[in-house]
Length: 468
Image 1 (cartoon, rainbow, N blue to C red):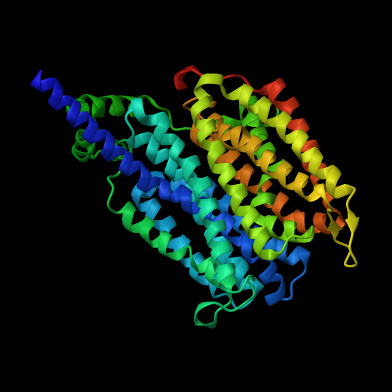
Image 2 (image 1 turned 90 degrees about the vertical axis):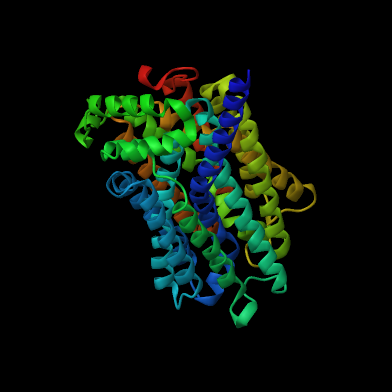
């Protein structure tokens, strides 16, 4: 009886330890979300500070996304070469350099280059954090711990928007106003990422290397040491299982992805998931929403507050998705999300398309139209956060077989960042052409995503990875 109690206490202690380890790794996801959203509050100030037009601002804001595509593509190879921990440290250094450089930028060109550096870090974090968590977590905790990545991303988005709001409010309500040390408030928004980036690197150096990586590098004794602290007595047998699985795996190449139509059908499906996740326009809400709400009559301070509320909606919805994905399945949630996004985006397209114009040619939502647009935007985020936000990451992690998984993920992940870039870079020009047109295009993408799911997505709930 005493032995059973001791084992229960040991199991509880090891579970707590692995949760803490996974949480440190998930800081990469937090920085992923923070870095991509912190630019939101600075967009208007960038236009004024550097006297830039819509196209130039769109390209500079979106330069991070090109870096993310590069980082995602190279992140897996770097992790296999340097190790998971060292790759996290490299990402931490890049995050830190980007925060410092973009916050102190002299012009739009060097600002864009520093954002590109930050994007590489984001791309690396988007690959290394879920991989490390999966490899360090015991089987009975892997699903919940894997969900920390998505939760960390949306929490990072919320934190960035909250910091933007706080700094703008402290500077008198505008990101263009000077704040501490005479620097513009928008600069402090970007510099605010630096402390978290440094802590990420320090934290990474305090957690153990992945046992799977250690065995692959023939450091079995170190792998046993890590596994003993996580799963106890089963460490020896687990090392043997890992060794056998590694010896049985074939080293794949990108040639393995080739199929009848250039790529294997399953790879095209993965790329399609990535493209639709971005083409519905979700990142317009998080990159440009403060500018968007100002365009329809809200003050800059109120616009930032609305964006914070929207990010809270995203966090709450992620918890719902985590609690329902294994109950209802992936495909049903994607269908519900596509229908909901089609309706809410269609509502926004109608409201902005029929809105009156002020003297400057900007749309004006009068009466209940403004409230309805605000409700529709938040319902849209709810529908996305329940479905296409987390479900795409879940499916990409489990839909490919063992031989092609890493390279198929790299290709689909890179496609996702390229699509994100295209949407973000074109929105300023679309905004000028008309917000009704912009949201009309996103509505069409949401409707197409429903057809895509119905025709090409197979349910993976309850299936082992080896059965894919």
